Image 1 (cartoon, one colour):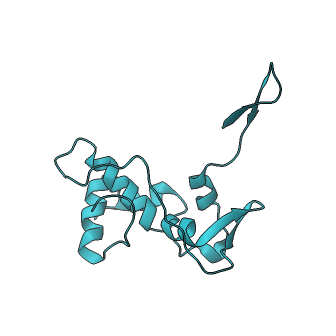
Image 2 (tube, one colour):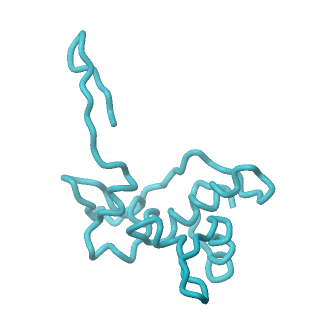
Length: 130
């Protein structure tokens, strides 16, 4: 939501999709790309993601910058941001929900998911500390 003055006395409210909503509603041909890849290689133009013409990439700055220290009180938030930034998804629940051996749906914590992720691959450099 953006609130901007439309004249000297009134405020006008403009609403639109957040960057995350824009990502989740991306075109099907971009399904395999993470938010980080979209943000660094594409631009939002005329209500759709368009590949940068010159092939350049931009530096993606992620705020707030949480500590990567597992002892920090915000470590779960750090893990959430790393997973959401570097793994393709359409729905956040698709990342954290799994079925256990009994067929029950179980929510994993972001920390559990991040630990599992680290065992299989590494993420590209981003503005979060490693």
